[in-house]
Length: 233
Image 1 (cartoon, rainbow, N blue to C red):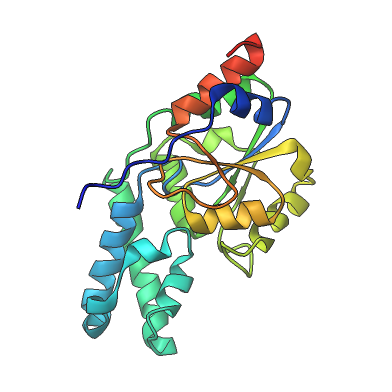
Image 2 (cartoon, rainbow, N blue to C red):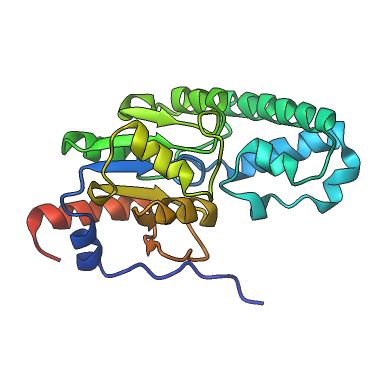
C-alpha cells in the first residue's frame, strides 16, 4: 500500500481572501504549533503499561487526537480509581518528557505568531491539554508571550470535538466568530471549531477534515497573510 498523501491546499488567493481582515486567531497547540503527538502517545503507553497493562493491547492513540487526557482514559473502560491514576501518571510523564526537550516546535510557529502580533491581530490558545502541561510547553518552547489568553481542557466541561469548546472560548474573550480564524490539525479540533461557526485552517494533516480549509504548514499561512497585504496572488 502506498503511503497516504497530504491533502492539497486551497489556492493561495482564495485563502488570503478568506482570512483577510480577521483580527482574532484561535490556535490549537498539540499537533498544530508543537509536534507533541509522539510524546503524548509515549506517555500514555508508559502509564498504561505500568498501571493497567491489560489495556495496552487495545490502545490506539491516533483515534483520540485532539481529545483531553481524561477523555482518552475514559475510553479505555478502566474503573474510576485506575482511570484517575492513569490520568495523573500520564500527565506527570508527559511533563517530564517536555522538560527533557522531547517536544519540538513546528517550523513556522514562531514566525506565524510573531506576524500576528506585529500585525496587531490577537492570538489566543485553545487547547485540550491540561493547564499544567500547557504551561510547561509554553515555557519550554518559548511560546508563552504570544497569546492574549489561554483556554485549556481544564477550563471547559466539554472537550473537542464538541463545538461548545470553541464557543466557550469566543464567549470568554468576547470574540465575534465572523472576525476570527481557528488553526487546527485534528479532526476533533476542526469539528469543534467549524461547529462553532469559525473559519478553520487545518495544518499538518494527512486526512482532510470536513469544513476546514487545507493548509500544508504554518509558514504557508504567513504567505497568505503576505498576499493579503500586497493584494496580489
